[in-house]
Length: 508
Image 1 (cartoon, rainbow, N blue to C red):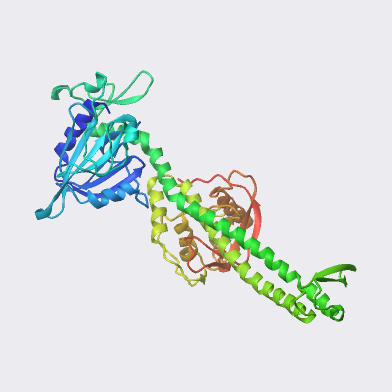
Image 2: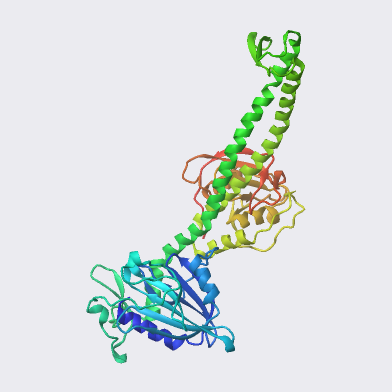
């Protein structure tokens, strides 16, 4: 945005926003703030302030803006000190790309004044919150110490000073044309690159306001950026948890190996028992004939213990190993189940087509409650309503296949839609959706329907481009849910597998 366009945007904002109440503040991108406001005449307005060096701007938007699950520090500060403010005025500097939003918050007898300042200065672009009474910087998006700026310090506690004057191009200093000459729009240059213009021609894209033109231009540019950033925000903690579980699995496998060595000493104890009369206190080891192999075997002994104490010690460790192996197997199963469910969730995060789907996944992660441990069976109520949590497809014979769209969708299918006789499909060892092949009036599923359901499971998984992969098939009665499990997490007591590859699925 050049200076003239920025001034026109600020002028339009100053006509429509004074009196608006700042209801919520988001930071969807590292250098971008969104103010959600309740307008004086009713309805919601969203104002974008971006200090991005390449996409710096301010304008009203109708774009779907994601709300990251964890607000960054600056966003959290603005929520504490600017959210709840009433917009008093918005103005742009006469000779620089700086826009100031003046607001006030608090009870009428003790109102505090705030100035939220957007500086579009290329690499040094910034968003600064200033106390309106003292002129002190309360906080800023980009902290600039003296060693970095040379002449201007931008840090909390410092007195706010406008950016120093710099040489600017003639284009950036053009005044706003007279009202009759204004025609906000988007024009395309010789190279096809679109940009905002104050004087659109009939061949350009024309708009009623410069805010509307800016919203159209930047919505096109930002759609994929916002989606990717939101994916990263939601996926980061899931990835971190998967990494933690992988480290836990490494430790469990080490415990398993150690306990297995204890169990294997049982045979040594039996050999020592058979040769006890030849053992003496003080021996560090003794050679005996192993009746299983027919060869000599050395048994390690503790010289401080008697032969009987050594034998009892070996048997005790062997018993400990047996007990420990059972506990370790249970830990291994629970950890693997949780890891697979998290990998399924991460798959849905990266498969989401739009921000709305990602918000649904974020909400289910934030609001999930520990589930009781119980099997999935016909006693669970069958949902009759159609849901956006799953897809419904038809098999070659006219049967029904249901496919989860998210972790919550996977959960919904198994808990609410499954009943005795239905079959569950999932690609073995690969993240993906739960697939449910519904029983057809007491008839056993035909091979064509089972192959179709298996192909659907491959299509809605990370294995879709890997050729033929193993697909697990289980009766829903053989599925369970661990206590405190995450959405879609199941335990499978018994299953069989078939080889299948992804099929083309019409999901319109």
